[in-house]
Image (tube, rainbow, N blue to C red; front, side, top):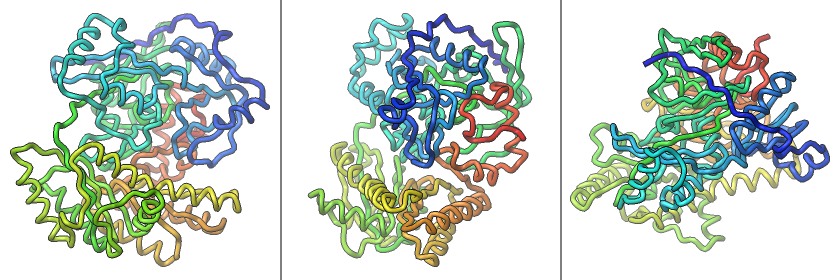
Length: 546
């Protein structure tokens, strides 16, 4: 084990062959979507949009920008909610043309497969080709070991997938690593970080790091990079303590950490990811998916506490929550869509959506154990919607998406009257023992204000999204004040200000609430070592030292 890594020189690339859009009228018209992301919070502007197709082209673009002191904004699918992919000047580096699956690996040590793709490959496409084993495009690629792994994979009788299942399947592979994406199944399988086996990263000087998990770890809290000209850089890992919750806020920092984790979740402020290798998992043979309906929010929360206890009779794959206003949206949208939601009644005030694996041998014991806990909290199998196959799960996911779809449509309608209106959705998570008190705090604040809200999210990780839906500009200001209030309360309880959506440009003030000015200064030092001119993804996560 070492704390040192040698950078590699990229190959030659002719930038005249890279697609680049420079005409401002064309950028603001044909390429207007490249000046925005899903937060719709900034009016983007850029001098030029590059669309490289190779790592060497990425390196050449960065090297030229570095020499000319030109800021660079990295873009993937622009599905983020923090403004991170929105350019505010300089040039834009869009990776959508780097979209190929590259190879499969098999680790004899742990018996696990992994697959590598370029950063612009859609997560949905990655998952689909793995599940379908539709891999003819890479049969002649890679090393002999990788070809053997592919042959072995294709002969497996089981199906495989990438288990993290981030909610936004139209994200790119590079993006989900850059923001350490997560989703419902993070409850059981962790966030993307836990499944990243290898990445390649182009630094601002154009040199490349090939980082394999387990190969480079800190020595006394430091890493060393040796460049091709013989010079060296030393990176000191920040010393702050990260929250012991699901977390996507700030640079990862632990005294014994792996170098790969410094870049996972770094939101592109340290380098451009050009290759992503992710671990795979065999799909379970039998699953049961359930929407359990409860007469009150407290009943639903108490069910969550019991079902995830150490002595639970059923280990859950995920636990999702929908509050009263979310249920109203589900009823209305299901009615207009012609979808019947079994067992949903007017008395239902909360839903817990979950899934568990079973075998023929243990199914009866699991169902009976689940029934006992449901009955204890005002629900039952009869007052639930259950399915035993992935088709039923997909139907339930469709119902789940009724909620954000309705919220987004409402915001769009109100934005037509008041352009400054936008959705304000929280992203906090707290430790297990704080969930009940934190939800009560949300309710207490919002009820007193009569703010229109919808609450849903990943309750298994104590990570609920409170969506505040302003009716006028004054409520936008009120919502942002609430966000800061909720952030401070989460940190006070030992939680995080950003559990899955990252910081980007929008939430830098909240990051300081979590780590303080000293923590921000430590992140600035790391950034300064790898990007001394502060050109890469400027204004994301942290600002330059004053």
